[in-house]
Image (cartoon, rainbow, N blue to C red; front, top):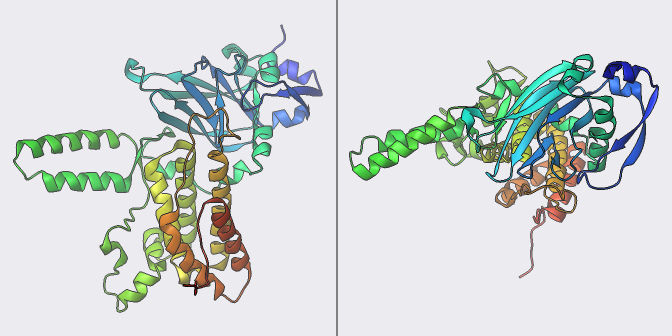
Length: 402
């Protein structure tokens, strides 16, 4: 029998069925040049057909039991991707960042560390197309039993590659495996828990000692994998006070200096690039993995931007890039929480930005005072989206009615 790679070489074009998100509808065929297949990667799933699990890549989700022939995802573009699995019974999601290379097959297995059913992990190995046949991947599986990544992304009308680009995920993980979970804690969360233990540790009361013991056990769990994000606690008044400042009120009103302090390295000019990179990474962990710590970090970074007038005036290009990124992220949030578009999802991520109402209003006032119109149009589109789809009421006009 000819090898899989040989079979691919024998045909110039092939009809490849696109399995829909629900994986239960009739095939829709797409005429695909085989040269395009050679420039992409695919994920081959093994033993995932259980109603307990959902498999996904980036912002795409698939129920593995809806269509019994579902065995993977094809036509994945090269670059960084987040492959993830949702455990609907234990309400958890775990993922692994991978680098998809052209002409490779990502073999994906589900493992249970320590032989515990409620503790799952993803085991991934990458092989060439030539070697994938020994893992059970055949041309039939590739052609008729794998869903089309590119078609799914096109249905979203949002370029997923733009979401996954612009950051180096390895810089934010305390492990070197690329593994992340919905339960991973940020550096700020770990620090707060550690401070709580220190405060209560001197109390000799039995009830308090039990509390400290529970906190210590929780800290041990959190330390397994830490999301190494910047420590910015806007609930702490000390964060908003710059040491040695002659104008503390100005520092409170314009928080550009906090961004410069958190992301500047020896006062270089690349702080905005690092700031935007962490903003993107926080979003990916929040939107895809439902990680609450990452979600809070994303909102913190957004709040800082909205209250940094000097940043908008001195870094127009970087500010425009930030606004463009935010606009895409908001649209992704909307798509992920629409049940009618994601019938196969057990849960959706709900976003509440009402606490940033004043910050958005302040930013709108600042943007209106800028000389150029580029940022005004960009932020205007964001405000329109927030008012129409997120239930907010952002306006720069005073309501004079009684």
